[in-house]
Image: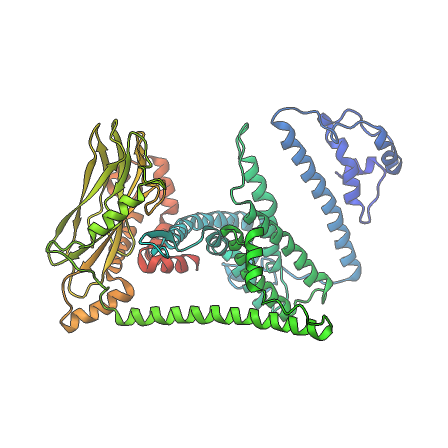
Length: 618
């Protein structure tokens, strides 16, 4: 770069970046058709519009064109920044400002953790320290990848929680997820991916006594810029040629994109415009409050509350009654109208808050007083006596508005009813759940079934099972046999669901049942028939009501298996015996991390995955 700069007649004094920029076309000899020959850089710049340089308009074709264009832009930007940086360094030298020594340099004060070798490490060769710490950084990335798998497992467990609620005004029940997908992405996923940089910035701010350091705000802004430019570019470039992708939730995308741009503008305002280089307390508080507003607006966009119809309906509900027409429109009347509207809106908000508090209080009282759930009358076999009623509901569900069966000649697959309550004693029980084929029986059809827990634990409350039901031509009924495990005195009522999906053939699933068109759900409630008479059973009942003791036992066994699997390549002695030398090498490198995190991080079974989420995040 220096020799090329001299050939253009440039001089030092902060112009190295400009000289490098002028020398850049001459360095790209294969990409240039006309080289600059003038020794005067100003004259060359004046003549440049009349010259044809391929590095400004490359004629490469194929896959190499975007790569080389990007390479040229990166080199140009680096050269310009190098000149600006050099000029800034010279200005600092002119002002005679002493530079702060780095913690790796001789005579510098050590940091919070580094240097690991103490002050004697400062005498090592810089290249040696770069190599050692670089390899250590790469090895830390291996540990991050291991704990990231546990973190994602915890998020999956947290967001997979489902509740079964009754539709108002009907006898139907619908099973839905507790967590909204958009809210989970903006909170749990964002917190997990941004936790390292947030903690790093907070540590740097406290260490520098609330003065910005090199690892403080720069870490946050750099990560945000990386996500905004690099991650989006990678996602776009990953789409194969000839294929397209569409944004599924456009309203949510518009809200988050607008907030992302506003975040940079707000950061510029609080740093450079208002109280330059000083962040006030109120500015930090307002910045924190922006996050729940973003989450709430994204949720509103996801559920459709930001549509024109929904907003008009909300404004109509919030507006107070119109004043009489004969009322004068003077200033006092306008003020009274505004005051009336504020009081009306405040009354609405207070009523909503009062309703939430009442519902929470009632639920809390019921949770304390209800040791056993309210049970319907049961027959001698211990099954729900309301099967006849639910069968009528099922017959109503599989018909359309005209009363005709909404299925083709192959029929519709559905359960007899939507739920079943089973009284469980001290012995194993075998229950049979019928699956009907209604509306037609032509041809051979099949569907898969499996079990999904709500509060029940497989292996402790029931035996997990999955399989396929086959309906031959003319067959209209099949059965699923399930094994229910015994309950101890004091154990609480548990619930799991039987799921039908993956239909093979022309048959369909009941679109009006719990689960919709893609799945058909049948809820099984396991009620304890053993009364809690002793003190031990009463204490166990209270513990099980708060912590679900079956999950505690299952989690303990799972935790033990995690530690054992971390010691073997592939998770078992059999898999390790068949592993290749590459797998064994990778296991030796990642084995310490696997064993450490397996021993310290509890499995996602505990407390709905929250304990694993917090520990893996820390």
